[in-house]
Length: 496
Image 1: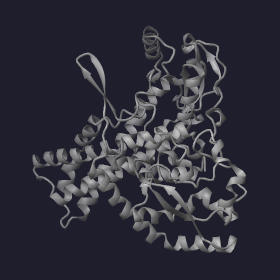
Image 2: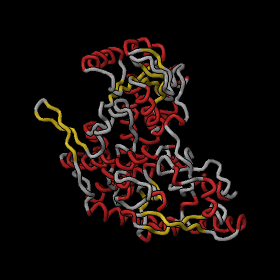
Image 3: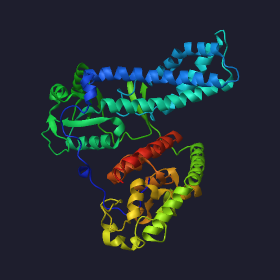
């Protein structure tokens, strides 16, 4: 959730916590005992996880069929028998949606990422199952029962998949990876991996033709040493930045990774140009990139606003006792006022008054000039470590992000959204250049990509890149995914 702007200059990438140093595989002892480490173990893990997910989907479907059958007015055992008999068709539909093959194919994958495909598979799976039942002696499900089976299976499958993946990754631990490229690009990859824990990847070092030791990761050798490094550190994934590799060298690396059984991820050489809103297509044998530049559809904006109103109103009602308790705690700790009000830049830079629980001394605004000089900032963002103005109750509220809850009023009024770029102070926005003002194209949010992936540990440019990705791919599913990921970010507390 959004933080107040009493911040010091953001850290440079080199100031971030150093990535893991090389050593034995980050896989757990249990994974080692089961022979699930290294490249060969990665293949076995992939097969086992696919079977585990398929079993979870089957259990979800059978459970849904039993529940729907048991709650109908006339329990039909024959219907249940034939429906269970046809369940492999449902699993086949899920398989055709690619929902068993992405965990080890992609560097970043989570259950939330596959929710749209899971919804599609559930709808089609229900139609296929009902069609097969129509050919059986018992006939099709009733419309109500079919809808019930689809919804219950979708919900149960989503929960089971998330739970099974969580337990599986706790059992097997992190995979070991190595980066190929110059130190500057290696550090960028390391920071992205550290802010996206769903990669479940521990980078042990990098390979480079140049004797470059400026990276936070240690240099383990040249690209020619890939086989030795893979065996020594039980490497499972190779990430290539592509900034110092010719096409023949890339083809040789691909073949070598195939032989070693290593997963391979390539970053295009000009990845700064290949931003969001781009689609890969083909003209015969020619790969082409299509750029899409358009404003979000009005229907998407309207549905986003409807979700803001419904959720913010429901949360204000449900959390009323908690809000009262926090207000009393602030009064007892540091007196009035309970709420902190500040002018922030909203949609298209229009100012509005943001409200949150007060976490600093009442004269904090007047004392800001003693702690930071806005005119001398290297970039338009700042953070003050161990801010002396923060109260005792305020430290707890900030750590748990409970101080942000009054912003639900801003959401209900239409000044903010549940999800969006972080709202900034007007004096900070005044330092923006034209490119940086692009983050003002939509309403600021209580949470967003910056709050979920790194918070104030991110540099301003990293925040801007993540927010550009969000803006160019605005959708309700993206908002829902960020909302569901917010509690984990709050609990972890990194960058708070």
